[in-house]
Figure (tube, rainbow, N blue to C red):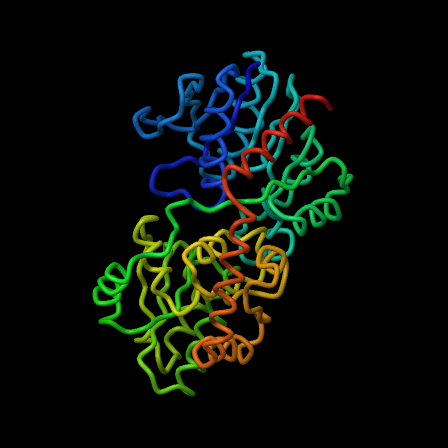
Length: 376
């Protein structure tokens, strides 16, 4: 059997949610199924030494590099389609959900979330126009769809009129490197980053839907009520930093207590999480939220949003807050600081909840979805 895979987003050192899902699940699936020939399709040249996939994986680069809506159209609607149809594949797997038209094989689209449908204002005009026009088409073109939460399954079904029986849930996992760090490692990290002070931590791309404005305002409110040295560490690339967020940041009384760490390696991120008072992860829209699992695995309490998929992922193992309610977010920070019994309870519940997820389980579910697609 021959399987083509859209691996456009597998860019070394830049792998966030979708790319991480792609990398982790395919590492396992390709290794466990040596009888299948996989062709990973990139839109740019990739060094084979970058990845350690088994011998049944072929790497193909097809120009042009698709990093703009015009080039997205050319690559997906024409170039990728032609390549797939010329090479007699049995299945096309697209972990980012984008499906070319009129394929000669079955196709499985992994649609992680539809944030652009609900909050189009957070996406630049050209990207927004492309996604709102083509994603309904991708959903209709796909033989079958997979997604990462029950919330997203219902959302895709409602938005695109796809029968629920044609959508599979393939939960995310978290890298096994996320484990509690030693006391020595935590102490060294704190001394290096916060001069030994305690801290809350946010992890994620600095994007409007991650709700940093309200997190900053809530932290500022928390600091006004608490005369302590607690910091807020912000881990992630400053990919989007709109004027509104800059204005909020500049207005803060305690902005010097917010420390921007940029992107950290998984090893450093595991230490950072291990030493945190809590993960403060409060997007107003999320298809899953991998940082929640990473915090659970490092025995770090989690404060997260009470909307979209996050209550489903947390399943009672995190403190929930309305992401639009600044006072409520600040109060949950206060609870974690002042109520040691509640903090310990969240740690134990999070540790237990983490066992429900792994990339091995994700790969198994994705493989089952691929099999269903082939039989459709």
